[in-house]
Image (tube, rainbow, N blue to C red):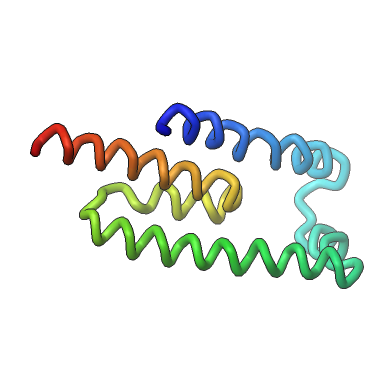
Amino acid sequence: MKYIYGVLCVLGAVLPYCAFIPWLAENGPSFLLLYSQISTNPLSSMAWLDVIVSAFVLVAFIIYEGRLLKMKKLWLPIASTFIVGVSLGLPLFLLLREFHLQKLRAHS
């Protein structure tokens, strides 16, 4: 699974930025314009609210599961979730979790 999670990390980082970087190059770092464009209609607002709620759920899961397993560097998938998105934060956490579980199995 670690190879699948690794590929999903790359996709989860690259694909969102393939859309965002051209927008940023065209419009500059305008938060107000970004907000107005992502909330232009109820459907796009619903999608963004879903993403925001998913990000907070993921952070709660990372903290809970990470502490339960005594994982280190939990800040990395949390920061990735807020900097890139759930598309990177989730597979990155699962990859780190897989490495951690593999290390635990090796010490058993």
